[in-house]
Image (cartoon, rainbow, N blue to C red; front, side, top):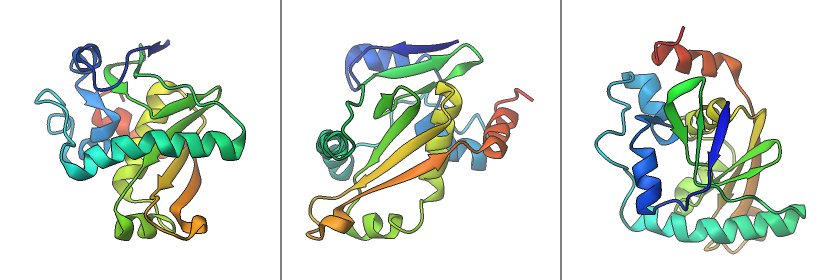
Length: 176
């Protein structure tokens, strides 16, 4: 059973919940490449510094743009768990009734590269999230307001569930 925990991301309550689940979407690529022991978040949440902080700030703006463009209201949730994956959790950037939302706000060079090819580590994160939340697809938003061309500063990729990759996660987690 999927459980949506209504806690604000980044709060003490969220950190307290997240630390109970050693395998999270942000470490999905590490799980695939180095195994489940290396992919445990038992040592704390990674992703600090200027670019990570900038990404968190711009994420709100990107969600507002998405809502306006698509005429929807993304639900902001803190953490998702699933009884089928007892050691796994997912902190989505948002949820729609049948779709996940992930936002990436990279610096210009990486952002532009992502417009044509989704980085493997991002793809793994999105797929892990779909596995935990039992979602059929996810809208992956790339947003960089510093790029003046409106056709390039906001881009949405629809990512479909990849059952072969999800099976690889299950194998790496010792579930198959």
